[in-house]
Image (cartoon, rainbow, N blue to C red):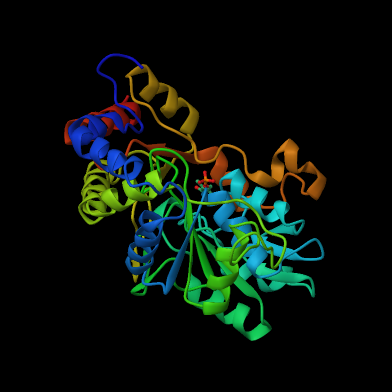
Length: 371
Ligand SMILES: *Cc1c(COP(=O)(O)O)cnc(C)c1O
């Protein structure tokens, strides 16, 4: 990174500021005599589930596994189809494939980048077992019509909440509306660990019991499998660190909003830019601040020349990737998704991003369009 540049994301300033507390949390776990599935995981599961307004949380080792185990808990398998979107992180699709099921993609809305739920009916088949909406960038999918379709046909709903911890839809938390919510604690996420981690939330007792079994070799007690299971546990150390970070999550979410407001104000009406659109009744948590322009690649280069890091989330929709060519999707299958991939750009945004850096980004974006 160029000296004096603007980082897209950086955890080190927070780490150095909180180093003593963080090390004492780790020391507390190491000295506790319990390293796997102890009180730290159990406490954090309760507190995170409460934060999501869900009945239960089951800690697992990643967001990918949270999705995979949630699908397994609904008995999704090789004979089934799961409806999702292609403008997502690869793991959404990898988790579906890990069950053997076939991902079926629907297009997205141009203004929010989120699943166009009006397109779901057209792809329903007798094999459809689950709908997997992705709450991309920090904003919820339009859940009411989606839940209506799922309920009327007896189809499961697993929410991919990896980018949207804390997001609200008509006052309801993501991860509390579908049968289950899958969260990632990958370090960059809204609530990030110091390594990998994930959680499944649910308010159904049967799914809660099933998930606890699935993450622990299929066992309920000791050395006896009730069913085929896996090893996918949240670590005591990560759980303790996540619990520590959960205490300041509310203020970090406010910091994200304030930075997003600064971008809104500084970039309104500039060039052909389209800024993030937040629907009526939605609370966006700004995991990403993603803008759109027809001159995306040149803008990205212009910012890079000024030491400003940006990202494209995501440059290639999953249905057009070589690894998923076997699904048989062609260019043109998802026109809005494909157009957005060529126009989107995510600007730096994380809670401790200095206001001066935001001002520099705004200035640099403006100078590009004013040149
Ligand atoms: C990060 C992410 C995941 C995967 O989470 P991991 O913890 O990295 O396995 C899944 N879906 C989306 C939308 C993500 O952003």
